[in-house]
Amino acid sequence: MLNFMLKNYNHTRRLCYLLFTIAFGFVWYLFKLGGIPKPLLALVSAAIDISFSLAALIITVELLLPRFFYQGRYGLFALCFFAVIIITGSSTIELQLKLFGHSINDYGKSISRYKEHYYYWFWSDLVCGSYFLISFIALGGFAIRLSFDRIIGAKRMETLEKERSQAEIEMLKNQINPHFLFNALNTIYYKIERVNSPARLMVEKFSSMLGKTDLVKPILETYPNLMTAKGPHGFTLLHHAKVGGKDAEELYSYLQEKGMKDDWVKLR
Image (cartoon, rainbow, N blue to C red; front, top):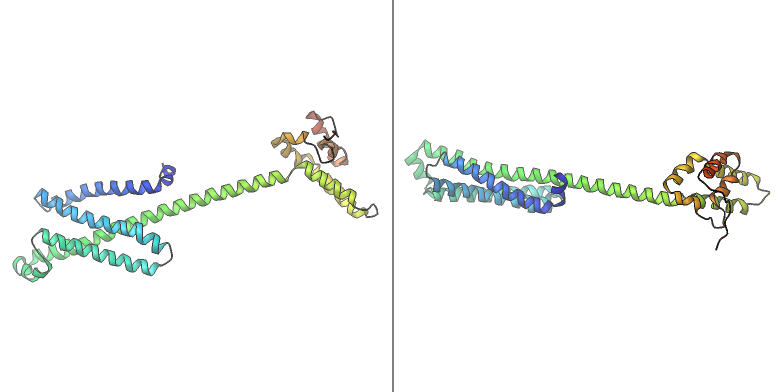
């Protein structure tokens, strides 16, 4: 489920906005209906809250987060976010007042007429409630989007790391070709002057190390076609194991068990 959501991230976000609007709208309408006895009036009041809350959510998540927060411009992000909350919250308050036949300008008259009841409704339910609701939804969306983006980033890094490791393994497999190693050492050996016995001995020791079964066998088990591959001079892998001396006896027996008989083949 998570992989599907990550692969269709943009579509998933749009779907989440739709589902959130439906679920939040239904719950918020029921909440409004508990304090407003007229269903139509409660519906319009809920629609005002939902519309501006959704606007603040989308602006924060789709605009401010990628353009400012992800760019490391945290101060500008905070300033713009605060401005969005003030604008959407104030618009919500203004429309809610008009819906119930009030306005900011007649605040004093309403206080004189309705006294504590209006004061409580205006500051607690309308002002604090509007700003809190919009801030909570916008910050919630911000946190969810940030979490998902980090998960996606981690998944992408994991995929890239696996691809890089696989590429390195393939490169090493291609490099570790027994014929290439043995023939390269053969060439170096015969290029060294006979009087330089320490250098020749070093090459012989390295050749014997490469001739050990525990090093070469896993490669041959993975790439069995290398057993019958021809070296640049026509010598087969059996030949290199044969001239490898005592240290290569185990490899020589292993190759014979695999059916190898010729230590040299004619090159065409």
